[in-house]
Length: 409
Image (cartoon, rainbow, N blue to C red; front, side, top):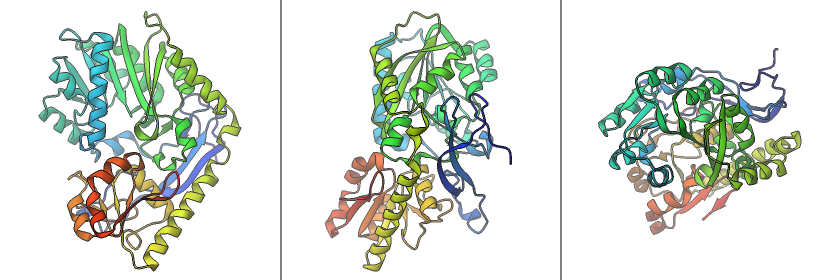
């Protein structure tokens, strides 16, 4: 069998980072019409490239199959909306954006971020491949182009007058199989002194906190700052600043510009790169032991759920997010251990989770079930969710998270 090759440098991939077995696409929710049909499962096997240190999955599905009709709507997380609004205020102040500027967001989803630029009078354009999600953005007054972003799309948009002073790419860099073509598009559309920001979960935090549930087929790559600097450099783009954020369990916001632009590098850049070297992210030893830590989490979660069932205590879950689907399918958890999962998104309610086939209900329905324990699957939002669902305390209900370790509170 031929080894897969690195999507950034072309080297053979032979070193396993984490093997989670077989899993369906994490956002392929099962509708009533599809409930009695089979599902396709693909290997969920993450490799680390020994040549350039990009952690990655093989691509088993095309982006068109994954994202053309997508179930994730950013606007249903209050915490994420606050993060977006803060970003807009900071970018306007730092780069002096106004009515003569142009902001382009790639993978703009339902307009969750660009709506705040629109309210501040800054012209925008969203680029979003999922037509169902883009429709919601347009209804919000956010002009949106339905397209997959890359060099060709960028050239077409630039020719149509959409050169950008600021480009935003939040939680999308990891989602593209052809990461070189994708990043080449930014060089095509950025103005000479324009700035592109990329936000993505930080590989260093993923390893430290054993966040294996962020591995799913829609996430083709798992990124460190050092690797991103190298990828952007190949496109004539230079990273000049980085910020660390707590979102998604620990993320980086990277600022890049054309190599010849005037933006000066900040001390934060060296600090974060040195922290990655200190954690051995550019050495095989930095990746040893992750798979065993993941297996330990699985065993602890199963032990807890089986004990809850044996004691006659009912368990539901909250958050029908992709990371929860990775966790449930890797652990082999189904409706026999978790009765239902609640989610605020009406687009998910009335469906079943892929693979596990646990039914998705509304938060109100979950409260009506009066479960003894609510397992919060998006652990990065546990405080927000525990506040929203505090009513379970009225009958002695408890919350639990499984990552980075099993915690009941």
